[in-house]
Amino acid sequence: MSETQEMTFSDVAEHNSKKDLFIVVHDKVYDATAFVDEHPGGEEVLLDVGGQDATEAFEDVGHSDEARQILEGMEKAKLKRVPGDPEPHDDPSSSAASKADSSGTSPSGGDSSMGLAFYALVLLGGGLAFGAYKYLQAKSASESK
Ligand code: HEM
Image (cartoon, rainbow, N blue to C red; front, side, top):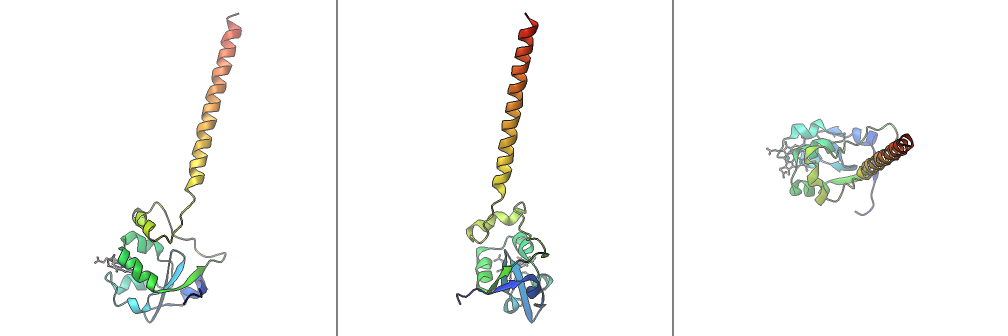
């Protein structure tokens, strides 16, 4: 099916039972109902995140590519974020997240602004040092007259 449905968090939250289980991973909604009994990690963990954002839990385990393929196969809809929703738990500092690059589903920007801020700080520091140097030079020149 090529038509992509959109669901909000409150839509997803209604599907939180074993017989009707939706979870959110990387801003997509997955229908995990049929998979609950098959999950090698047990049904309990899936039920725990039913109707919620499971991105962090899913990534923390460091699931294999095969697990990601299974996940893709269960895609139900895209998540539509509305104001007041919980923030995405897509923390780039979480340990297992480095495996996410192969799936291509998580465009993670945001680091470049940190780089820019650092660059600006270095420039500012250099400017200050240069200014101080010039000032001291001028001062010592006027003193030695
Ligand atoms: C619907 C989403 C999920 C799918 C498709 C999935 C799929 C899988 C698969 C295929 C494995 C076998 C190992 C591997 O291939 O990586 C696995 C293992 C595991 N999963 Fe998941 N998983 C999902 C969600 C979760 C969540 C939310 C948790 C929460 C903590 C979790 C915890 C685990 C654990 C602890 C194992 C290791 C089990 C073991 O090695 O004994 N999984 N999962």
